[in-house]
Structure formats: C-alpha cells, structure tokens
Image (tube, rainbow, N blue to C red):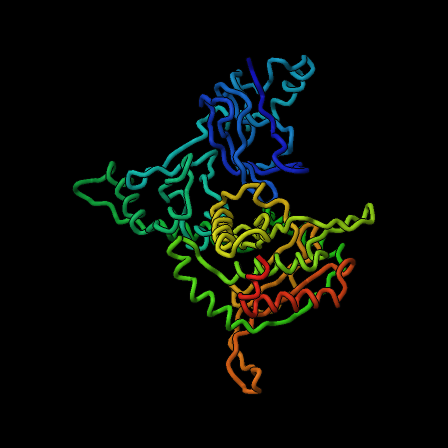
Amino acid sequence: MTEIFKMPDIGEGMAEGDITSWLVKVGDEVAMDDPVAEVQNDKLIQEILSPYGGKVTKIFVDAGTTVSVGDNLIEFDGDGSGASASASPQAGAATTNTDSATESQQTVADAPTVTSVDVESSTVQTANGHVLAMPSVRHLAFEKGIDLTQVPATGRHGHVTLADVEKFNPNEAAAGADTATIQPAVNPVAPQPKQEPAKHNAIDITEPLREGRQPMTPIRKAIAKAMSTQHTDIPAVTNFDQVEVSKLVVHRRQFKLQASEDGIRLTYLAYVVKALAATAKKFPELNASLDMATQEIVYHDDVNMGIAVNAPSGLFVPVIAHADRKSILVIAREIAALAEAVRDGSIKPQQMQGGTMTISNIGSARGEWFTPIINGKEVMILGLGSIVKEPIINDDGEVVVGQNMKLSLTYDHRLIDGMLGQSALNYLKQLLSDPAYMLMEV
C-alpha cells in the first residue's frame, strides 16, 4: 500500500523547516521509526523519524529545500507518482495536471540520489548533491578553504564531522585524487602533467559567497526575529558594575586541578551561575515573568539558568535546570556538556526549554561591559565580562593590584526598578567577591 510521509510539526508553533540532508535514498528499505532526514528549524537540527516501514519509491524535495508542515516528503511502496493509494480521484487528477511542474523533481527522484567520492579509501557521502554535514562543519570548512566533497566522512550516515575537517590535509587529498584520476589514462611514453592542489579549487568556489546577497539561514532568521521582538517590546535598563574577585581567582586555582582529575573544566562561569541562582532566591523578581495579557507577575519556583553559547551557525541558549540545587562542580560539568552539544549540533529541543534567567559571557572574547538583550519571556539577563587586573584601593588605603570582574545587568523596567536591580547586583557581587559566601547559600 502506498503511503506518503508528510512534513511533521517537530517544534512548538513550527510552520516550516529546511531539509538539511536526506538519510535515505530511493530504493532503500526503511523500518518504522528509522531516521530519514535532518531538518533545521529555528535554532535546531533534528532527525525526523519515519512513521511507515517500506521501500522508498519517491523523494519529493531536494536537500536544502524549505518545506512547510504538511508538505509531502517521501513516498513508500508506490509507483513513483507521488499519489497515495487512498487519494481521491480529484486528488489524482490534480497530480496529473501538475506533472509538468513536478517533472524535474521526478527526474531527481528516479535518479540515484546518493553518490560517493573515494579519497584514500574513504567515502564522502552526498545526498542530492549536498555533502552531509552540520552547519558548524560547513562553516569550519569554509574558513579553512576546504572543499567538503574531498573530506573523508566518518560520522553517522556518512556525515562529515568537525574532527574530519580538522584532521583533513588538502595536499594529501589532492595527491590521492590526482593518482586516482590520472592512473587509468596514463601514457607510459608521455607522463601526464601534475594537477594543481584541490585546495585552490575549493577557494575559488567558496570565496564568492563573501560577496553579494545570501539568504538568511533559519537560525539567523530566528535570532533576528527574537532580538527584534525583545528589543521592541521590553523597556530594558542596564546597570554596569564590577567586583573585585581576587579570592575567587585563588579559589578556582586551588580546585581547578582537582576538578580536571574528575574530567571537569572548572570555569568562572560556573561560579557565576551558582551565585546568580542564589541571588534569584533572595530577589524573586529576577526569576519571574510578566503575563501582560492577564496583567500578572509569574514567579517561578525553579531557577533554570540559560547559558548563551556561540556557535558558527548562530547563538544558542541551552538551559541548566534547577541550577539553585546544584553544586559548582556539577554546574561546570553541565556547562561543558551543553556547549559541546551546541557546537557539534547534537543539542536537543528539551535542553533549550524552560529557562527563567540567562547569562551571556562576553568575557571569553575579552569583552568587558555590554548591553545584552533579554531572552524569551524572562525579565533579566546578566552580561559577564572579563576579569581585568587594575589598580584598586584596599581596606588599608593602599593602592594595590586588584582583579575586577565586569558585570552588566539588563532588566525589564516594567517589573524591576533601578533600586531593586542594583540591590540584586550588589548581592551578586558579595557572593562573587568571596566564594565562602556561597557556602551559606547551598
């Protein structure tokens, strides 16, 4: 029986998504719940699973196509016409009338949709002319001037991974490709001239992408929409401040090695997450939301801390749930795991939901003060800047070298007044100035 798999709704309010790659081709036998494609929607790339089992007889769209929820994706056990066995005569007539419009798609579906290029005994998989690779992998290859079709793929379903790109040597690949290409046609009397390295071809192909117009990716569209909405709808105020953290620096140095022995990278961000979670318990307005439709303030019992993570494809905000109940070491472990998931494209939708407050860390780029934009339905965001060695006056009136951490607290002025915002910031500074204070907040 012919079954047509249509584009499912894989996210809240999802209307459309991009088919980044197909994991199956025409002729493949697929079991129910097998992954058949990767779809990018807003900030996530997710595998979609087949609700049917059977043989793939038609793929309706190419990889790289934007499809709406309900659009046809795959035909199972059919004749390649794209018509369901249960379709009405009218539907069949409509299909016939649109044959000319879908002729090119039919040609693509009938042809083999997966090809391979052998490079030094490895295989690079492409689907409908697209190399299977996450956006972060494509960005890295672009920056390095590497042609992804030359990179041996070791990832699942023939995907090129970040590690594949990192270890790829264009010169070695070019030499291997030259040998494979020239050897069948070698004239023993007149040797063929040596080919140019493949990396030059890659640069010629990719460099024009830096000029002219390019369509926004779904991730960039989502970021642009969210930032515009938040900036327009929320009357935000930012308080800039700094805190001397020499004791925090010493504490981290003491425990950094011990943490690394347990496989944990102890960062200052983990301390700030713990301190801000404690501050939210003392100042619950920071961990609230505004429901303007009902004119109510919604106070959240849990402190779910969003951590802004930068990736080549855009900015993501994974969430550390119940941050107020976790130790600094547990928080540090979760930060590392979430950041890695963002950068390798494996982050899940549930890992980016439920945030009640957010930290954006510009200090990792040696930034100091800035005005971060409030995320989602939250009412504040903390901008974390660098720790800078500067002259300070100690309690004895002496000028000494101090270590100042820069802080930028942006808050929704509809709920948080300036006095409340600064009082919360002062309490946060107290916790960060001496980690011993945090022991009283566990």
